[in-house]
Amino acid sequence: MTKIAVIKTGAKQYKVKEGDSLRVEKLEAAIGSKVKLETLLIAESDGTSVNLGKPSLGESVTAEVLEHAKADKVSVIKFKNKVHYKKNVGHRQHYTKLKITTIA
Figure 1 (cartoon, rainbow, N blue to C red):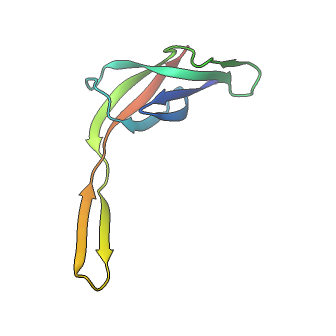
Figure 2 (cartoon, helix red, strand yellow; figure 1 turned 45 degrees about the horizontal axis):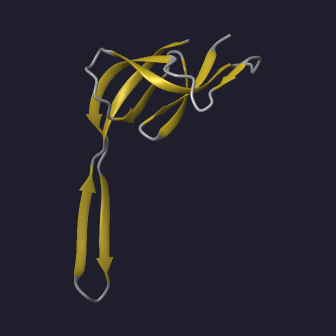
């Protein structure tokens, strides 16, 4: 049976299993290094056993840092009719790509 886990990083929660890769908010870690992530829940994929943290189980999930990059640009346009006001602002969020290696 494979294990699944719910991890918390960057004020967000993600459901992961071993071998998954995901993009999270930027972490201060070198590329190729291992990071431990705060774990909220660990369960078997068929639902036979569930370990629920109160509030967390500690750092039970290990991931490898694959890359640091910027996401696609998001445009924010402010416009007011009849007053000649138009403002265009762009934003690119930094992210870290992780690969889940082990769930303890």
